[in-house]
Image 1 (cartoon, rainbow, N blue to C red):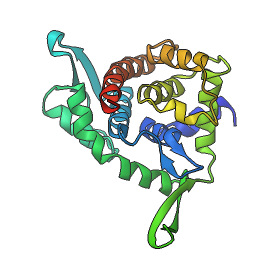
Image 2 (tube, one colour):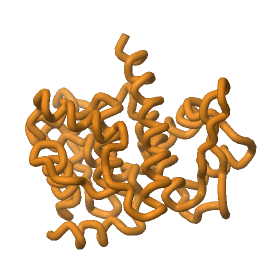
Image 3 (spheres, rainbow, N blue to C red):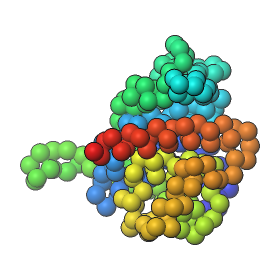
Image 4 (cartoon, helix red, strand yellow):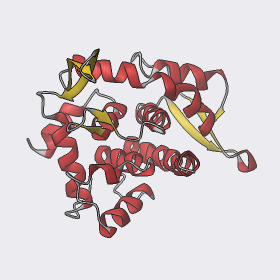
Length: 231
C-alpha cells in the first residue's frame, strides 16, 4: 500500500487509534506502557481535537499552558467528552489528560476490534479462568503504521504529519523500546525519536501545524509524567 493510500485510509479515523495500535504487541496480546497509557491516549485525543479545529492552546505564563475548546462539539463519541471538559473552562494539560485519559482504553479497543484492526479470542488464563486475548486484526493497519514509523526512525525518511505525531506520543510515553523487534532500537533511533518529539518534522498544511503545536505541548507533559511513573 502506498503512503497516499495509507493517508487516505486514515482519513476520518483517530490518532488515538493509531497510537494504541502501535503500542499493541501481537506476540503477547498486551499493550505496552499500561502505567502511563491513559496520559498517552488522552494526549492523542487532544491532538485529534486540535487537528479538527476543536481545541487550541494558550500560554498562560506562570500558570502553564491552557487548553481551550473551539468550534462546535465533535460528532465522534470518543472525542466529545474531552471537548465537553475543556468547553466548561480552559484547563491545564495535565488536568485534561487525568480527566479524560482513564476512560479511553476500553472504547478505543472496542472500536479497533469492530473495524477489524484487532481481534479478540477466548482462552483460559492459567488454564482455568476464562478470559479474552487481543490479537492482530486482518486489515494490516498496524503493520502499515509500524512500517511508516520504522522508515522515519531507522531509514531517515521524513514522516508525514500523522506518523510524526504517533512517533512523538509513543516516544514521549517511553514505549518505543518495547517495539525493538519491529523497529530496531539504537542510539540513532532514540535520537531521531527525540528530534520528532521536539517538532523536527514538516508542518505542511495549517491543520498539521496546529496538530504539531499541540503534540509538542502534550509530549512535554508526557515526558514529565513518564519520569514520575517510573520512579
